[in-house]
Amino acid sequence: MKTIELNHPLIEHKLAILRDKKTGTKEFRELVNEIGMFLCYEAMKDAKLVKTEIETPICKMKTAKLDEDKYAFVPILRAGMGMLDGVISVIPNAKVGHIGMYRNEETFEPVNYFFKVPKDIQKREVIILDPMLATGGSGLDAIDLLKSKGVKKIKFLCIIAAPEGIKLIEKKHPDVQIYCAHIDDHLNENKYIVPGLGDAGDRIFGTK
Ligand code: PRP
Ligand code: URA
Image 1: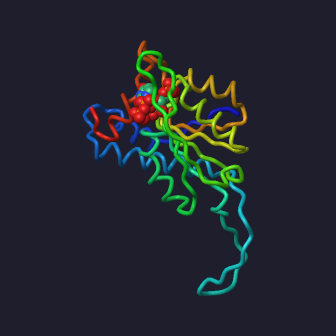
Image 2: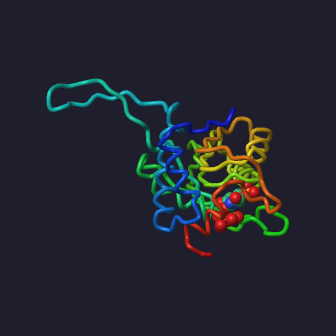
Image 3: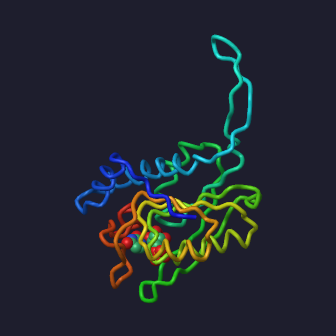
């Protein structure tokens, strides 16, 4: 599946503030959540609705609702947590799992340190959250872990994606749809996205 990039003036505006090194923790956090919400909105375009009947103050009507029990958000710790409030505001009854992953600073390989997901995860559509898709190593491991637990349908929401990461995920997991706010240019020698926004986790949590 070809990666879907949000293409909208409002997103470009928000990304410009997010990327700016002068933007402080509070505003950075707010923007990560907001962009997460827009990504979730886009990712739900193919959602199947369940027919239902309601009564407005005027009359009865046939309509349709989302089956919120079909979804689980899985943020990749730490930075993915920054998107959680935003996506939960769109699908408040979705369950949440967590995958702990950090990149070894020398090898750039992901290290998995935590995995806890809802018991019925294999019955749910899983929406992975991580603001940065760089080499794609962390995303790839997260998808492998979820598939090994029987998950059939996975979407991957990220704010900035590098062509290298997209290529890897599209090759290894062509069934996983990636949604991103922007596809950037390349990775530098430290495997940071260029122009990117720096270290997403550090900027969200103010750790540097
Ligand atoms: C960042 C980011 C991704 C990963 C992307 O996490 O949030 O998980 O790097 O890089 P990759 O595509 O090359 O694997 P980091 O390892 O900095 O951990 P953190 O979220 O705890 O800061
Ligand atoms: N992780 C980040 O937080 N930023 C990058 O540019 C690459 C990996």
